[in-house]
Each structure stands twice: as structure tokens, then as C-alpha cells.
Length: 535
Image (cartoon, rainbow, N blue to C red; front, top):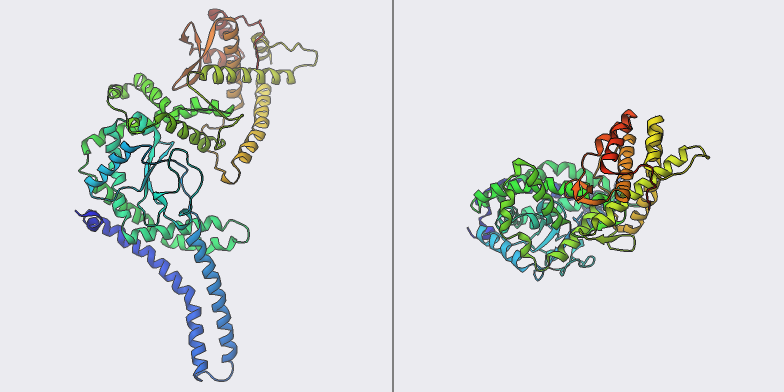
């Protein structure tokens, strides 16, 4: 093989034929736009030579020329928008070669082995996925934004004609070993070969421009642009999708000879990483994000989470034996700084947090997580529960911050009223928080991705009762807030996790039976009549 000249040998002809079909849509659109102008030229020429003398040809010629001028104006504006509109670009943490020389060397070795162009740059995404992203669109040839890790959004990845950028899931770098990462990246890097074909690159640029024009069409004064853009996208959607399938097939064929046996085992690690990453975000990161803190080393945390998952899940048993091999994060010069940048981006993408740290958006280390997140979360929820109970109680009732008060209330009254009050309070609290986050993001706003399904009022009530009991255990029974890598905040008593609290609490909330919870409190040594320290 000899670089891009041998692309046809690995199945790209199918992709190229689809690319040509996409380009034919562009050519036909151009022909339709030029048709009135061509007719106007014919009429003017005929009038000039005297072949169309007399009525009604002067009026017809004038009308056709006016229509042609209008179509050319509209077509020119549309073409300019398609060429200059900024396509959606995935927010990533850019890595310069000086920040990860060994990683760049590994990727270039892969490209040389498969005889394809090397990616123009490498960036990280806080997710379990990897892909090639073309950033050569005209609007991205301007420098954009500030660098997170040495190197930035400008540079080689935005030069005209540059190869695509390789985007790598940051959890892969910490969980996978170097050989596993190489095997996983091989079919991705192989995609630079078909991407270098001029017809495929041209077709992709056209589709990206149309997609961006649809977004531009949602703005004031430019709403009409979305109409032809959507029409052209519909006309080339099938061919564009088939082109991408052909490109993927060509890349997969080319990567067959690179670490094929190891790739099968590495794909198992990809599945494991998905599971552990999801648990880490929903159970561990989300409670911190909600209170204005963001764990600064999520990628390091995913190793602990997956190690714990491997210990608990017999299907994953034995995966931890690989941890003695060199981790892929060793390919970075400053893995801690990269992890921190990826963790901040994860909070921004999945929770809508600000792009920069601040007084109300500060990082938290894993060592400080139990005290600064878990304990604070419990006491905030305990205070909310007691405030809701105060609102439902008679004015003369004592406002005691005790577990006994909640036990008595839920044993004697329908828990639905308290659950409904809590749901309303939470909804009111979230409105200013979401508004403040949106204001902080400004024009660079990102959509919020819900990490949890909506919870019922009873579930919220049970969570708040658990938080109050945990506070009481910390205050009067020597308990401690703890962190479980897969389950998030946990209660430790004498250094042992107490995972048996949920059942007694559900008996109280669902069945109005305080007995199991009173037995649990007595076993642990919690005094339910003693006031709980709140936030």
C-alpha cells in the first residue's frame, strides 16, 4: 500500500460512490440556482440581436432578470452561510504534542503501520468513546477560545486540508493499559485514510455546512435559510449515511492486521469502562455537582470504581490482574492536570456547570470528599426535611431537630403530604440554580444531560430520612461519612459500611412501621431524641 493512493483496495469505492451522489445533490442545487440567470442571459441576448422584438418580450425579459437577480442574491447568501457557518464541534480537552509526546508517537506508529495519514492532533473527551473529528471548516480556521492543556483549539487541527483530530475518551487512558489502548485506537486511526479522499472530504464538508446552516436558520432574520438546508439534507441523508458506513468498513478492514487478538480483549475493557464511568458520574460526581463542587480527578476515580466493580462482579473477575501493566495515562506528561481539565469539562457537559472554577464552583479532592460532600449533603437534606415538617406542623408544635420527631410524624400521619412538600421545595431550589448556571455559561451554553431519572416523592422522602439518620449516627454513635466508588455516599460505623439502613427506612415511609428503624438505631447506638447538628 502507498498511503491514500491505495484506499480503493480496502473498500472505499462504495463510500466514494456515495460521496459522489452527495456532491451531485450540491451540483443540482447549484444548477437550479443558476437556471433563472441562464434564462435571463438567453432572453437579453435574443433581445439584443433582435430575435425577440415587440411585446410582450421587454416585460418578460425584465421580469426574468429581476427573478434571476433575486435568486442569485438569495443563493449567494445561502452559499455564504453554508460555507461560513460553524458546524457543531464537540467540546474537548486539547492535547498538544509537548503535553503527550508518547501518545502522539503511539498514534503515529499506528498510522505508519496501516499506511494512513496520522491525525493532525489529539483531544480528550470525558466519555467512553473515541472518534475522528474534522475541524477544517472555514469557520474553525480562526483561533477559538483559550487552551486548557498546553496547545489549543487553534493550531494544526484547524489548518485547511489537515487530517482529522483524534478524540479519545479520557477514562480509557486511565483504565486501559498501553497495549489495550493501541488495539482500541487502531480502527479509529485507520479512518484517516478514507477521510483523506478528496471526494469524501468534499461531501462531508457539504453536509456539515448544511447541518450548521439549519442551526443558523433558527436565528432572527435568517429563518428562511433553514428551509433549503433541510431540503438538501433530506435529499442527501441516505447517501451520506451509506458513505459513512463505507468509510467505517474501509477503516475496519485496514485495521484487521493490527493487534486483532488483543482488540477482542480490549473491547471487554471498553464495556467495563462504560459501566464504571456511568456509576461514578451518577452516584459519586452528581451529589458534588449539585452543591457546587466538582471532583477534580474523575479519571483516577474511575480506576478505583472499576477495580471495585471487578471485585464485586464475578464476570469481571481477573481484570484487575492487568493493573500491573503500564497504564495508558503514562503516555501523558502531566496526567493530573489533564484529569483535572477533563473532570471540569465533564461537570460542564453532564451537569451544565460553569466552564471555569469560582467561589461557588470549586474542585474537591477524593480525600476530602466524605467530609466536604457526603457530610454536607446529609446535613442539607436533614435540614430540608425538618423545615418541610415545620411547614406542615401546627405553629405551637416544638421544632426539634431530632430523629424521634420524624419517627413519630411518619408513624402517625399519610407520608404523601411530607413527600409532596419536599418535592416542591426541591423544585423551587433548583430554579435559581439552573438560571445561575445558564447565566454563567452565557453564549457558550451547553444542554443539560439528566444523569438520573425523575424520582417519586416517596423516594425523595426516604432519601431525606436516611440523611437525617446518618447525621444522627455521626453525631451520637461515632459514625463517619464515607465514599463507595460505585454507590457514592455511605455511612461507616466502626470503619464498616452500614448498607442495611434502606430497608428499615422504607418500612417507615411505605408502611408507617417505625419498629425496624428503632431496632436499627438501638443496634448502632443512635439516640433518636438527641438534636441533630444541621448545616
